[in-house]
Length: 410
Image (tube, rainbow, N blue to C red):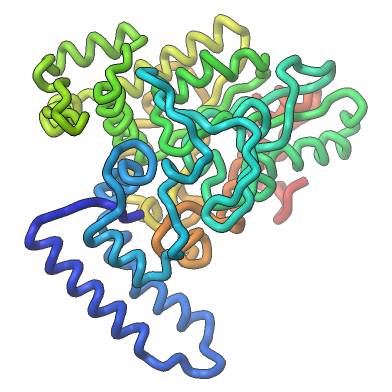
């Protein structure tokens, strides 16, 4: 994910080297019967430098696609063109699937009843703005509802909703219920409230405004190693659009960080004059804000009598290094522990698999349909071996022992 603007001499030189390498690669004749290994090597060579930039590029990617006024240009745009970015490609922000909310902390949401194409795949939303099938607000008798709160991967970026791990989970739960003799008594709905680039605070806000109205029986909060970056983008955008900060703990953190009115002043272009100062001041507090966000959500769920759990969802390629992700995963587990929440660490789901096999494009590390299938399998394997969650889903049934888990799902 590499869409940032840069003017440094170093980045300009890197751009020239990337362009030259990619052009050279394109000029190499492809032998007849080129092997899969050869394709993987070429693909890896073409985007290795993209992956190496990690979260720094990911931040610019979301700023360019969703949250900010900056568009793709410079090194990122040139590289993407050379790597095969379609001419008709547009930013998520310009794809006609989101609407912006005036001076609103949530900032944007999916437009209801969209029937479009996004990144080459069908993209439809129901009447409530979820990337998924239609569902009634009032919960039918015998239905067990799971509300998923998350960001782009959870939403199903670059895949049709039928291939997203959330919908696969719904289909499997209903099939498994039939095998367990629950078909006539219990149906499952997985309601996908995830939206691309939603920060942890936007996920909390989405729960309070939307998800709780659907009377969920289980809430799943999806976390990623990119969440602190999404928090930074969201907070800067909240200041830029002059939205009120709705949470006491957030206002206190902003005050404690020393963010001033001068920092929040808009320049003649409508951009934050002190954006870099705000980033610098707030950076030490994002994990604390994450903790307080989950704590607030846990309190909401407890007051409703609804179980809450967390999952850690990886990106393709960028989170495959166990040592590199260890700190973030450790922090997320600690946050879950302080709110006494179960957490499924799925961060190793893509380990050992070549990224070109799982990403939606060489220039985009969101998982494709196969990546979502692997996420679904990893999540479901954890569910069927976790007695607490399994019995919540299927009362009176015993979870499967890890050692007895078959190669396929039961």
